[in-house]
Length: 145
Image (tube, rainbow, N blue to C red; front, side, top):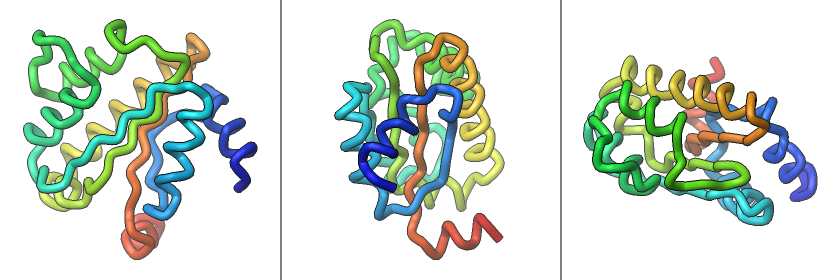
């Protein structure tokens, strides 16, 4: 996909959501989000094998307010607000999420569902919200199977 096509895709709020992508596409996604002047939010989840540490990493990068409750409900509340982080769109890149996904698959899947629900809510206001989970090709193949 060309940079122009990728930019057009990211600008389309109706297509936004949570997606597993090839780790080799990470840079292009970040670059396209930056070109669109979106808030680009790479979250390094390396070593986060529990929801609490993963949520705290997300909260730090997205500068969640002090009232963030460090649970999935609070994650949803904060992502659906983001008044402290105004932008034309959002590109969150959840890097190195494999440990959390392997250790707590149900909680990880619940977070992905929250990302999708968040994208749908923001799409109603025509604001793209993307959550990308870059994975090595082998893991992508396993997910697709």
